Length: 133
Ligand SMILES: Cc1cc2nc3c(=O)[nH]c(=O)nc-3n(C[C@H](O)[C@H](O)[C@H](O)COP(=O)(O)O)c2cc1C
Image (tube, rainbow, N blue to C red; front, top):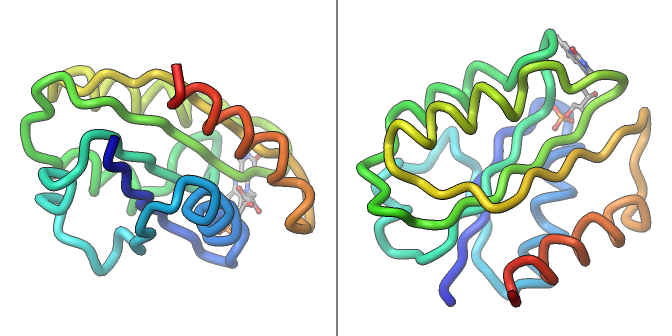
């Protein structure tokens, strides 16, 4: 299983989460702002992370997902960091992914104000476990 981690992060929280996932999966991590969506063609599993902005995914992450190539059933995992409520964050990304034929297997949200590495330990383990199934 070849995985890659793509994220958008405004203040660094989602970037930290993405880097923890990347370390645990031994998968490359890319800032989606500077990545071409066609990069996903090289991987079997694509993990996509965003902060929650106004009960929605960041517009940067949504725009990236909207530009992804046809998925052909490729697996995705969505993750986010947020302060209070995720709202439509995962729902919006999932419906966009579904239209493009991606198969999302897991959504993981981490809630908090300031995050330490330890805050991501359990959520990362959840992702690793899911991808081992
Ligand atoms: C403009 C803006 C809107 C936000 N809206 C929400 C929101 O609707 N729900 C929520 O739980 N957190 C919200 N937050 C908090 C962020 O999701 C949270 O701080 C997140 O960890 C930031 O991730 P980042 O450091 O990767 O940018 C908002 C933050 C900003 C700056």
